[in-house]
Image 1: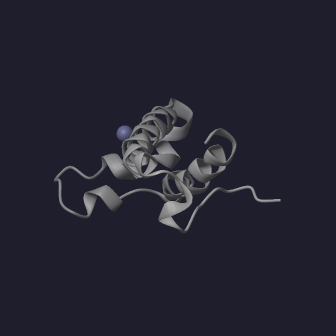
Image 2: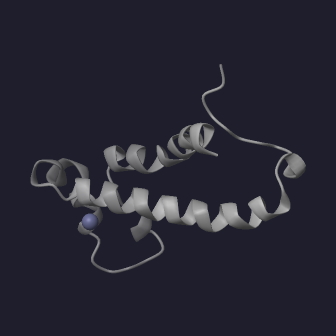
Length: 90
Ligand SMILES: [Zn+2]
C-alpha cells in the first residue's frame, strides 16, 4: 500500500494543477509552520525545543538554521506530512 503521494511525470495531472500546487504547497507549509511555531512557544516545550533559535539576535544567513534537533525534526516532518495528506485529499 502506498502511503505517500509523489508523482514523477508532469503530465500525470492537468497543467493547471502544476500552477495551483505551488501556492497550495506554500499555504499548507505556512499553516504547518505557524502551528508548529505556536507549539514550540508553549512554556513546557520552549526551553528544550525552541530557545536556541531565539538566542540568535543578529540576523545572518545562518540564523534560519539555528535550532535544536527537536525543532529540526518537526520542520523536516513537513515533507512526509504533506505527501501523506496529499495521498488522501488530492
Ligand atoms: Zn519562536
